[in-house]
Image (tube, rainbow, N blue to C red; front, top):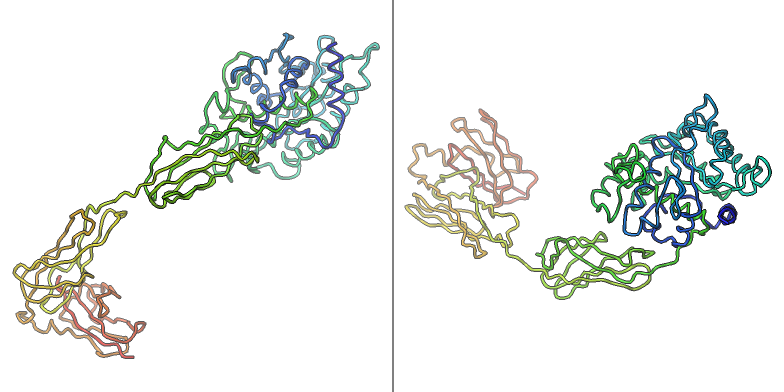
Length: 578
């Protein structure tokens, strides 16, 4: 009875149907697809199929994944149960099964060692009485690059199918014939980092194998596709068999696994049935081998009669949550949102994020990052994209915190602390922190022994000699102030009155001015518009006596030259002619 059922299943699985999918690639190598397969076909595959698998190290991605899957979630120990020997209700999976049947002196350990050895090795295995119940054969590549796929692998597999497949020449009840027909699973080669593209390299050879399988209705486990596609189906052509990609900027499989939970989003692969946890060979994470186990079970369900179609399961509920469970945030801040789409096997779990602005305002990216714009309340909404119309939402209150001024730094132009009566000095105030909500300040002068006035732009005008205290006061209610002491000297008391009238010419002029006064060692030159805006700040080289200043690019009118000599500022007005 078992042989009859298997035979019927093989017939169904072997009939080409170009509307069906035969390639187990990245599209099917995920848990959502696996959980959507009707259980009747998983059950049939588990109880009726006997698999012989031959491989070397890279092939362990399938076997270790299959061994670990049965220990993943509740019920998987039954649904995906595996055994290496016949046990009722378990998939019989014979690992490293065919290598020892190679002809004497021939290396039949995988498809890469001796490109035609698999043909006679498979015959020897299937003709042996102890393997009479095997009905699925799969061989793995070590490294497919450089091998003659068109000349050896494809015709070799076709020959075996013609002999041992449904209605094959070696299938029957006569002497020397085999009663149970076999389904052969093709396989592409693993990806090679930075070496996938070109003649006889993994990409082109994978396309050759897949095209052959699609044309003939053969099943293929597409290693290359799974290795080069991340968990959201982005293709990284330079990727290797571990998810490492320069164009991605790291390892997309490691990054995904590090952001997901063991036992919930992925499982530990196993060295053998009931063995220790391990990665697939040449892997530094579990998810690659996990995906190849998912792909394997997809193929087995197809062999068992499943047509590959998944009944649509609509979204019934969306739960929206924020990072840390926050329900409040400040204006200008961001908050990450996530969604839980139920049921877990919903066919299309894509959602769209949006914000309903109520008394407040915010924006949100399609990655779920909310940015608060103005205070009040907003509603964050996740909407299902499967046509079900299901939404989930969460209300957020946005507050408008006041960041007060904590410090004011007052400085003068050129760090001058002395000026002459009648002169002016530009003062500036740095208000901290940089995100203070109100950075306005008020300027004032406390006259001590001297007298001065100051504009609200910070331009100090000296009236009489002595000291004055210039004060900058915050206007946000923080009561923070800062001051600087300025000494005013009476210009008529200078021993060298000529300092008041340093040699600047021509005045008026057309924009080119010169200062030539060998008795002065000028530390700095500042030029201001008549309204006090600084338009030039120049520190002349030490020892320069003739200093030329070009203001030809400025409009005509009056300007103020200020030179700083030994921390004393001297000023002179000039006129630029039209």
